[in-house]
Length: 218
Image (cartoon, rainbow, N blue to C red; front, top):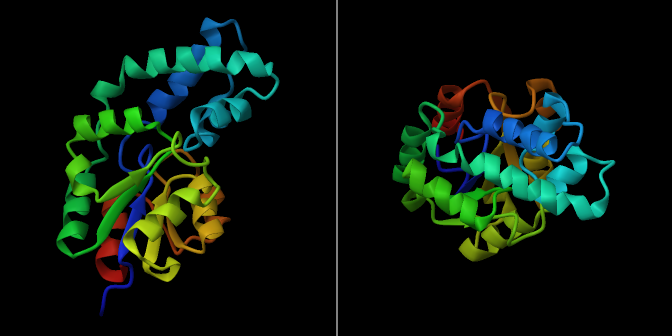
């Protein structure tokens, strides 16, 4: 069987790196620091993958506009105190190496800032494996398709030859808006039922299952 997808684009948090818990804890701690009622775990998990200010607007919708920057500063303080200890999901590095060896172009589309992704690339050691990346401070936030559209233009790849992989509906909706196929992963921020409602090609229970699907179908 020939290769179906030339370009495979991964979300980062909750898809390759096991960072969902740290993000939720940092959002809640930032709100508490400023005397704001923290969002529930469910609400905090739902906004993972969006750009930070967009995420905070969804997590804390009743907050005056001028206070979001203060919350963002406290969020960064808490997240930076733990992001050096975060790990890739088991099997993620081997999966990326296998896809690269098979000749796929690999990219990341993330709600992180460029500085945040660069730190994650350095800590994980995965940065050199990816041919390109797009971040929330360079493009419109998911589910706007700009990240995927720019990556496809950069590599001269059609939507039919592009695959998006992510753990949130924001990722799947971005793919849909770009006319790109998508896979969901149910081990990250959003539950399986929520992901499957967006009709991805497949929804993987863990990295091993994701790698197996990609080995056969990509």
